[in-house]
Amino acid sequence: MALVRPDIMCGVCPTKANGFNYGAYTCNACKMFFRRSHTNPAEIHECVTDGNCVQLRDCRYCRFQQCLNIGMVIPKQLKPEVTEIIQNLLYLDAHRNNTFSVYVSLDNLSLEDAIFSDSMKLTEKTPSYVPDYYDWSSMDHLAAIEFMKKFEFFKFLSKAEKRSFIKTSYIHIIVLCLAMRSVGMKSQEFVYPNGVDVFPKEIQVMFQKCPSVLADVRCPLVARIHELKVTREEFVLLTAIITCNPGNEAYTVFNQEIISKYQQAYTSALVQYCLHTYQQFGPTRVNDLLSLCFLLGKAFEGFGSVWTAYMVAQNDGKVKKLHTDFLKYFLD
Image (cartoon, one colour):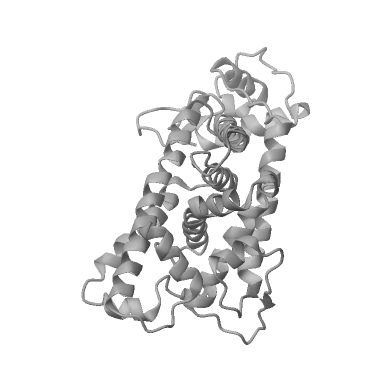
């Protein structure tokens, strides 16, 4: 539903429209009436005035006819192949989220370990276990990498291609998942469960005299996702589009084409989903969603810059391998 000017009236009844619904500007009551009538047409009986009612809300037949007259239509169902793509991605994302939420890694794994290990040693958290920043952040890394490794073409890549495939996008996937999770927790900024900050205490202390530096990393992407009210379906499709980035010199021409076809399929599914859900506003919605990639890139740069400044200022040996590997990638 799109917001409309306050002077636009419902095309069915004499009240103000609250959105463009099913192909016409209507109030919410008439939108719901049209939906119910289309679902259960048996409730619509012949008009006793032969279709000449003045008060349309008093006659279901005349009210429904007016809905049709102003061009209201129920959108066709999504194509089965689009629904299947979305359902598969939702399943993969649910597995990723379960890994992040339920388990903890007690080992100091490197990025190479995460990429090439067939099965990482994870421990299920006990009710008494209280994860800190490094626990949540490590699981964010591991869950995102496992998510990427489940794409069908991954097993056909060479070792060098696998490494490059993960390194190209995994931090962006982490940041997007972090933003979506934060929105789900009703937060206005990046945050881990139970209010754990997305920066360790050492970095918070380092930037305590200039908190805007951290706020500029924490807030913009989350605020925009809040504003757009991004759905879970849109989120998983956007995640897949970002994951399947064919622009990598490490790929053979054949594998580059395969990954490109996957990205095209996910992009097409996003377009069809938006056209189905938002009708004439679908193209604008697609552009709004893809524009999140700019804020995603800014957040990636922000995290990298903050961590680089911290590592230059002091090296206390506490930072885990996954974080130092991220910094090496960022600086490259």
